Each structure stands twice: as C-alpha cells, then as structure tokens.
Amino acid sequence: MTLKTLDKNGKGDKTAVSSTYEAAAHVSVKAPKLKSVKSKAAKKAEVKWSKSNKATGYEVYVSLKKNSGYKRAGIIKKNKKAAFTVKKLKSGKRYYVKVRAYVKNADGTYYSKWSKVKSVKIK
Image (cartoon, rainbow, N blue to C red):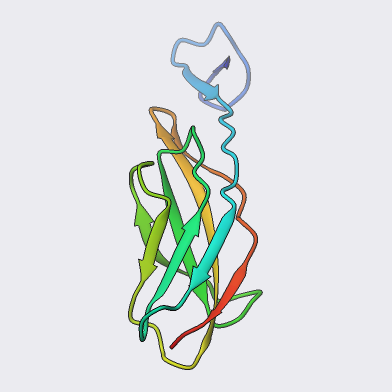
C-alpha cells in the first residue's frame, strides 16, 4: 500500500497544514468458472460454479441477449455456497447467465472478472 500526502488543491505538498491521505490498495479475485446452468423446473434455472478461496460472495446476472442487457438475479453473501436458483423466468425463452466473485474489506469492494457466459432454455 502506498500513501501520498495531498494539499487542498490535490497537489503533493507535504508541508500543507490541512492534508488528506489517499490510499491505493489492490486486491485480486479469481473469476469463478461456471460449471452448469440447467432448467429442471418451470420458470427456474439452477446455476453452479467453482468457488474462489478469497471471495466474500458472488453475484449472478441473467439476460435474454448474450452481449447486453444483464440484470442482477441474486447475490450470495457468503462463500459457503457455489450454487443459486434464478426464479421468475419466462418459460420457453433462452437466458444467458454469468457470475462474478467479490471481496469486501475495509478499503472497499473488489470484483473479479466475469465468468464465461452460458445459456439455458427455460422449461
């Protein structure tokens, strides 16, 4: 972690009376790998992925288009589960799913890259 002293104008003047500190930290989180996306029941999709050791939780996103329109379907706030059931989907439609891991600490929230996208046709 590096610290940089800034004055009121944002310039690096270490003699300034009123100064703030800017801390820069980097936390890397490995992207989860989607194992499967299946529709076993009507209007539902079961999503499974590989767990990341450093992750605090996961976010699952779904869309009707492969390259755009993704909306968050759910958040798994603990790293205990690597599965999620997306509900209230439209029967007969093809949905695209992706997942990302995150780490939450005192410095903020850090996200992994997206998993590869997988599709599923809903029963």
